[in-house]
Length: 136
Image 1 (tube, rainbow, N blue to C red):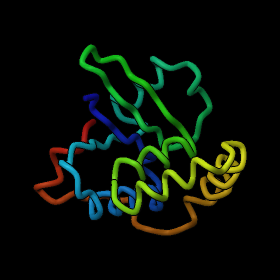
Image 2 (cartoon, one colour; image 1 turned 90 degrees about the vertical axis):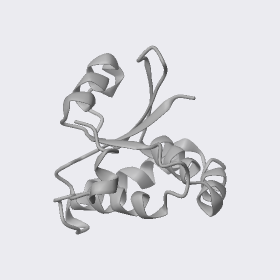
Image 3 (cartoon, rainbow, N blue to C red; image 1 turned 180 degrees about the vertical axis):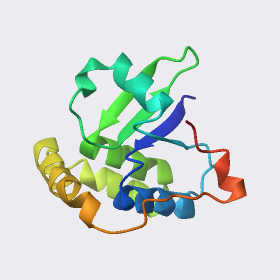
């Protein structure tokens, strides 16, 4: 099974709040990892995927055993995250896939354009049990 990593904007309060939300609702094996877009892993992933140039989005990354990565951005990343969380969130993911990607991405872009004003503390301080899930 691939390792999943969520790359997020470490300077964004809305993004930090989203990561906190995931940490609170992760009922699975707690296998999801997190890394800032501007960190080492974020830079490496963006370097490995030239199609990500200019993408201002959270990025869902699945790393295989060879270190190769598959990426999803915008609404596809959000739906992958909901699917990962399982339960009712997985149902929401399935329903979201019924909406054409163009419309989903437009809604994502509208939120993303305002994300730095939507509030939340930018400082994300994981507790000791969560710390191991954060990568550089």
